[in-house]
Every structure is written in C-alpha cells, then in structure tokens.
Image (cartoon, rainbow, N blue to C red; front, top):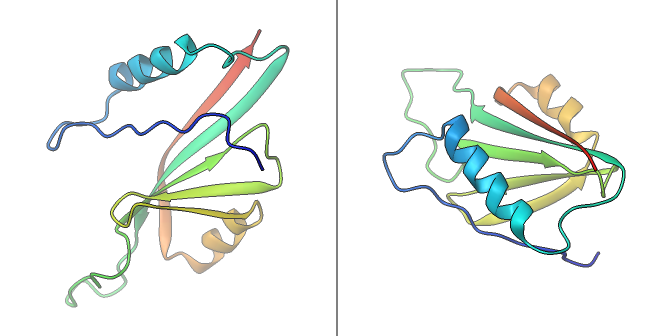
Length: 118
C-alpha cells in the first residue's frame, strides 16, 4: 500500500479540538497538490475513549486512554487506529468496529464524516 500523504497534526497542549480547528486543518490538507479526487468520496473519523469498568481501580498505564479510528474511501476493507500516546498507527480489518462495539472496552465519543463531491 503506497503512502500518499502523511501529515502530523498535534494541537497545543490544553487547547480543545473545535470545529474551527478541524476546518483549518482540512483547508491546509486540501491546499496540497494532488489531494482532490474526481467524483464523490467519503471518509470518517471516530474518537474513542476507554471505558473503565471499576472506577475504584486506577487505569492501567500501558493501555491508551483514547484512540482515533479512521476509515478511508481508498481502503474500504481497512480501518486505521491512531494511538497518539504510543505514537502508533494500527491497521485492521474494517470488521474491527463491530468487535469493539461488542467488547465495550472503548466507546465512540464523537464521529466526523467527510463527504466530498468534486
């Protein structure tokens, strides 16, 4: 799988991720040559937060507290997880979303869908 673009985006510590910040990040990404495609494409991004079953126990430090899940139009059978604290990107089959829903160890907090018609 060739890498088309890999951009690192990390907001300043303590700032909240707002729709204005996301709009600015998308505008920067769209300004790069070769990013726009012909036709219609759809991608989605999900922010997951860890579910702690027993609140009296401390959270394990070796597990990520939050994940970002990304599904891309170019890769319909794959789902990407970004683990920011470990600086890892995990590539999995698209059915991993169903597995995560059944396990309930991570819960999707909010979802962003990108639909572009060019």
